[in-house]
Image (tube, rainbow, N blue to C red; front, side):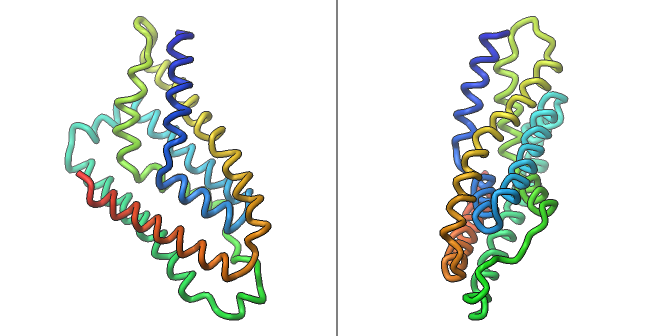
Length: 207
């Protein structure tokens, strides 16, 4: 069990390092609205990770492998979510007024909204479900209780993902102190919007 656990922790760290839609959403929220909102987005993202892990443990995410219709429905839903968030960021950047140049603080976003953005971004991605159902069972040692082990691995997976994002959010929040000019914020909204729209289009186009 210990060797399986060590191998799983190492693999989970490698997986966490791969950038994706969640990374883009978390960094955008941390830079635009501060570390607390960034952490709220991380917590939402980890709830999504945990839910996918638990779904794999209980066999629910196997439906995404068995049903092309279920996978495509999740894929299109995830793509719509990403494109919507990206388009919203581009709209905000496009319609920023000159008065914002004299008001350097961006509009506030509630911690609850940041949390749900993180959760929806992660849970609307069917790749996470397919990955969970194919990744987690590989590390269950022979003779171990499968359900209990998968639940444990799901919690460890979410914790490792959070550990990876914590310093990222801290650095993004620190960079925010030098990114207070409205023109710089608008540029960042444009970049993050383009990235999110691109990720959404890629997800929609993939089979």
